[in-house]
Image (cartoon, rainbow, N blue to C red; front, side, top):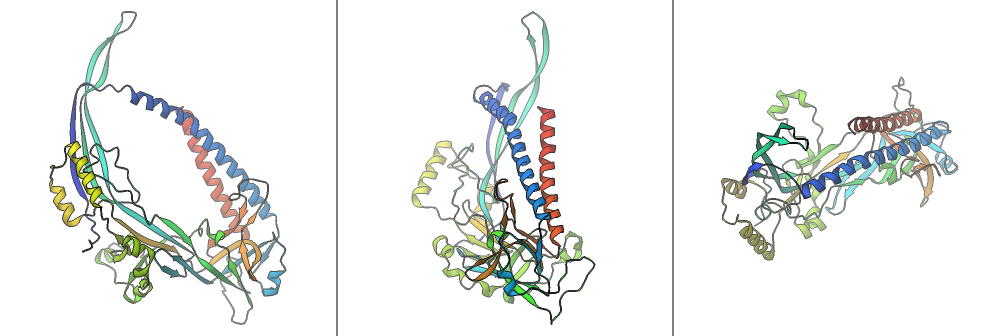
Length: 431
């Protein structure tokens, strides 16, 4: 019988060590301290140089784009034939409210219509070790070579305790260096890691009378012309600017459930941003690769898919042997009972989905023909740096002019560089 997904954390008490006398750390600790200081002195300047190079490349690229001619796709005078005659490297800009897309996770055989990006958020049931040390402050008299003496304070009579908490984490934790790795073993299985998927075969339709003037509130005219184009997946590699992630939950008929008492009473906590989809979208998940190979099933509780960990006989025997060696084989605690009844098992995996699904987007890039269709792709400025910083392939949520999009990207780039400079300035003071 398969286990269900439990969420209650488990707490276990580990060993306690008492060290009488001075808490002097030498040997490997001193060596690690030297390595840490070397890294602390060398790494920040390297990161600063990389940040400045990235900022310089991005500035040149955006400046070139600001000085380039941009063809607007939201104009009545343009038609489908005009798109095929646009020279390569020419920037095009448009705003679309007609977005046809499907973002899919093929390992789970699930697709979310209308989503430009789909993110799988994976969580792992893992033990976490918490070490706490409590020391007294002692004093001693030290004598210098010249015969003078002085009194100094030092840590002494230290008590070190280890405690362990098991619960859902957004990353795997290596238990090999735990004080008691046998009793708190973390399997490192990861069949469905966190991943972002972009929309497949995204088609945008640009109405011929949509303006990007913030003072013009008009939207569309039924008699206006329109052109359509595909959106290259690389345009979505950086996501959709100004569009928040929305968690996806699957419920009967996709109907939004009534708000809970707390969400009604404490409405200032924020709006309900969850996207609800019908359970019918999960009809193919029982035969998906993830379900067949790793027993992933949909359990709800906020849109979660769950896979229980099943340990092999050899792994269990090895783990019992490790517990025997560390003396924890018969160390039964109340947390073990709670863990058996209401907590997850270390090695269990669960995940949920979140999407970016704007109703309106503005794009800026170049057009090219692919398989007979017009496709909007990033334009790369050659010879100025790496491809990521030297490309113009922007997707922003909402209605924005080409100039506003470029200025927003420049603001983001300048902010990242400023943060890195501030960190380096603080580092230089401390160093």
